[in-house]
Every structure is written in C-alpha cells, then in structure tokens.
Length: 89
Image: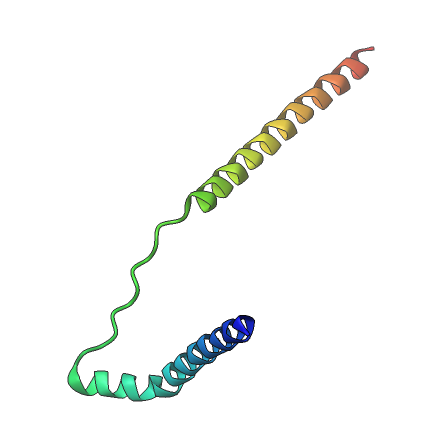
C-alpha cells in the first residue's frame, strides 16, 4: 500500500511541475505587457562563467590544434630534407 502512495506523490509532483511550466508559458505575454507598462523590463540574465569541464575541453582543443600544427611543420620539414637529399644524389 505504501508503494501506491509513493507513486501517487511522484505523479502529483510531476503534474504540479508541468502545471507551473504551462502557466509560465501561458502568462509570459501578459507579464511582458505589464512589465512594459510599469517600466520594469526584464533584466537579461548575466553571462555565466564557463564550467571547469568546459574550460578543460577548450584547453584540450587548443593543445590538440597546437600538436597538429607542430606535427605538420615537422613532417613538412622532413619532406623537404628528403627531397633535397634525393635531388643531390
């Protein structure tokens, strides 16, 4: 019997959350109009700082690009040396 109450509680909370989302969506135009009439415009959300994971991913991409460029330069230099060696002989 307790399981039934847990299930009912879960679904009631879920339904409440969906009602809240629906009301927010439905009343958004009204809120915007009231705010414009009262001079209280919505403030833009401040830009959030990148998370640690995002920072690490960005650094990893940077290191990857640097390694690729260095490898290309090294391979290009080796090719030039081989070609010059072959033309001498």
